[in-house]
Image (tube, rainbow, N blue to C red; front, top):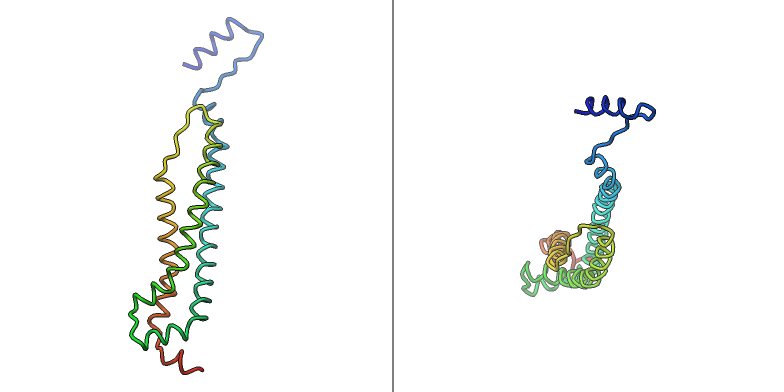
Length: 163
């Protein structure tokens, strides 16, 4: 088909070269930068989540070390493992909820501004931010619970004996 068009072009306009482009290639070129941007955002988002989890893990470990004697006394007085995990986890999980409440409106505004540049755009639904908050709460919960579980399983005699 293209060869037939090229012959017809040479017959009709011999002084100009026959140049053609497919429409799907044009559309692909239009969205190539968006695809690259998405790849960069995905990479750096994964790196940020990993660093945040490591930081949360370190802060939780520090908090557990600071409260070792308190945890030992609570265990001696009959606290269950779930009580100790809840004691350590609730402060951190409140912070994640507050961070989600602050970040959600900012994320909605930034994504809405970015989507205004497109002729065909989607609406950002509220449940996306609820799902993102739940996912961050789950990741933070697992990260904090690992350290809290270590503290809950530790022998209270060792923590109280050191003083």
